[in-house]
Amino acid sequence: MLMSLTLKAWLSLRTCWWVTKMTEQIARKVPQIRFHGFFNEWKEEQLENKVEFFSGLTYSPSNVQKGVGTFVLRSSNVKNGEIIDADNVYVDSEIVNCKKVEVGDIAVVVRNGSRSLIGKHAQIKKEMVDTVIGAFMTGIKSQRPDFITALLDTAQFSSEIAKNLGATINQITTGAFREMCFNFTEDKEEIKIGTYFKNLDQVIELHQQKHKKLITLKKAMLQKMFPQNGATSPEIRFKGFEDSWKIKKLKDISKRAQGNDGRMSLPTLTISAARGWLDQRERFFDNIAGSEQKNYTLLKKGELSYNKGNSKTAKFGVVFELTNFSEALVPRVYHSFKILHNNSASFIEYLFHTKIPDNELSKLISSGARMDGLLNISFSDFIEIPVLIPEPEEQQKIGNYFRKLDTLISQQATQLKKLKQIKAACLEKMFV
Image 1 (cartoon, rainbow, N blue to C red):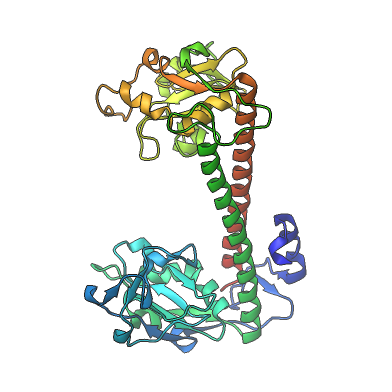
Image 2 (cartoon, rainbow, N blue to C red; image 1 turned 90 degrees about the vertical axis):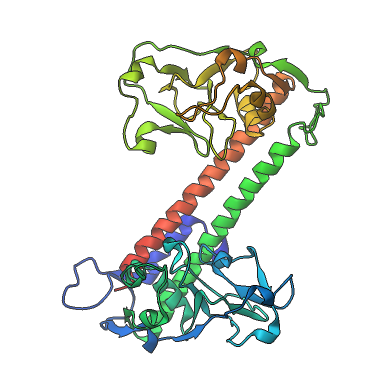
């Protein structure tokens, strides 16, 4: 039932579970938000009085076996509060001299090359046969693992880690971990709190998986709905389209967009390879155009820009259509253009997302990226590149399909962000 709840329905359940105490709690150690029926103060105790700690396995490279033996959980196997498969390590079972993990155990990273990863943790949520934790992790057993997992998600735990990190080695010792102090309540309240966060984590995980599946679907369809490896038609097509795609130069279906009409109050945008068009104030916390803004290009909705910036995710730059503003000012260094003759701007954007044009763009680079990260590709050369395209009607259908898919991905990302914000707020208000 819970897994099918919409975000709106989930939020409405709060009124059934919570009584909000909005006045400041100075003298009494109680959280701002509590379940009905709980009034007692919370009490501070060392963590070692509430849980059982166990150590991980120390092993040498000679003990490692390929795909067989005892599975050793390491930092790479912990991501977003979940246990995942990632560069899995197996060792000879004969050398194992530590406890094997059980459902409910919590694995915590206590030593790592990156300080930011210290304290990363995940609960064992399903049976894992013949599995241990590595030496750079500490295990926790508790009668109320869901509550302890939520406690380790709080800012209090992050603060304790910061206080106890080694000066030269990125680690928290077992002794320091054991002596960390937190506030605890009676068993029944801890169970309710733990169950609440367990359910909330399930909803977050559901949305994360849906978001991931949509991104995977988009990646697959970009390969299947555009011709690959010299083919002249794609693997998947909309019904009614059978003609081969034709090679045209970009200049045959587009025209340069340049200059502006002097309005400097329009939104001033920049292109992020990962996120598309962004207001400069959102990305850089200010409008960084300065006096150069008078030379920016006036771009209208439905027109495109090629950001020839070199980056890890876009070695040969990216193309985006302006869809979220009716008009905007964009950097003159972008190659901005409009699509003609009923061809689809959205189709052209997603054609560039496939990376198929990268082969042609690579031929235009006379030298590497400049000091500002821009590739040495002129507009006159850019507009000459050949592109394989279908008739305008098929372009429109393909462009519309991917635009709707991107909308779904964006909506799912927004839902996920809201859920994480809810969790962060609850962690702050439901713990002392």
